[in-house]
Amino acid sequence: MQQLLQQKPDGVHGITHTKQIAKLLEGSPTRILAASLKSPTEAVAAFTAGASRLTLPIEVPSLVTEDPHSIRAVEQLDQYQTNP
Image 1 (cartoon, rainbow, N blue to C red):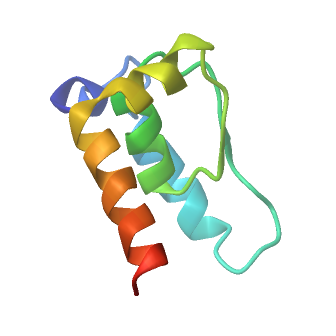
Image 2 (cartoon, rainbow, N blue to C red):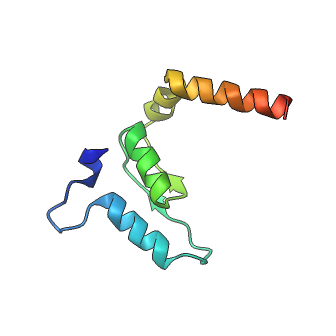
């Protein structure tokens, strides 16, 4: 995650920029698209920062679904939905 917060040459990194745009657009019907993300960590950071749409290489979503923590979270959610 720390790499995502490293400053870029223009002085603003992508996640901070996404947060700033999300704040400006708060209450607007406009959606933020975070593009060219390369990892699950980048995807989570962008989504958390306010992006509601992501473009990812096809293998990134499968990396998330193979993660043991993600699998357990989905199982817990399924269990909760079955037995609230």
